[in-house]
Image (cartoon, rainbow, N blue to C red; front, side, top):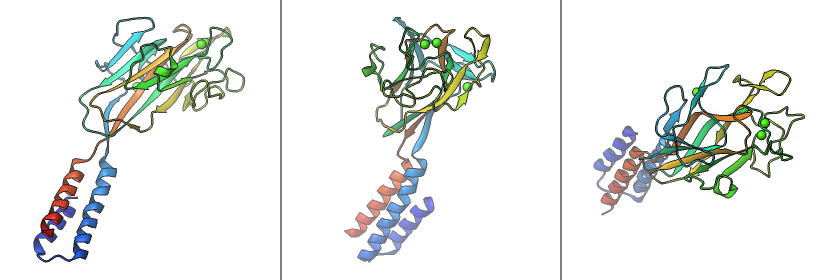
Length: 269
Ligand SMILES: [Ca+2]
Ligand SMILES: [Ca+2]
Ligand SMILES: [Ca+2]
């Protein structure tokens, strides 16, 4: 990039009489030099956490029906000894990031651990539906109001052939898929559940991603929540490997464009 810049500037110094074609060539060189910088250096990981150590104040949790936000718990998966945030039941969990650099877009990726006997879309009694949701830049005042979330879905950890179906990978109540649809791992974490026939491993991992969202504010708050779950020993959830990426204009690209444009304008006078 610096070679491109110095080459452009040297060219400007050497030529006192400009033709139209030379001006066009310079403009093309400046623009061509700018594009790779924006595409190659625009995505900046502003935050990541694998929860293998202590959790910072950026994470907070509000229990169902509670009024006091507290530090969320952490755990370790029984089989893989992988640190994660949780276990959670019916509650809201927020990630708050402040002092963000100037940016135009944000995306959030994470692993969701769906633990034990989630019942998906099942709605015949109090065992379901089992809701999980997230919201970007808002904290729902009424977590049971679907309109206050960006996405509400359900998960089922039963047998995909015979068990209750789930809304994921679409939202509830539109989504109608076999249990564990879209899971990246099944029964790998080691959480045990006993449905009467003895304890068996019962969990699933989903690699979730918000996709690229328009976002320009200096602060970002992401709320995760679940509702209508049974007790923690029956069904719970956890978060791992959170990555927040911003699309940040690359300073070098902006400087190159400005210098190149100024050089062209000056020679035109
Ligand atoms: Ca981890
Ligand atoms: Ca259950
Ligand atoms: Ca349930």
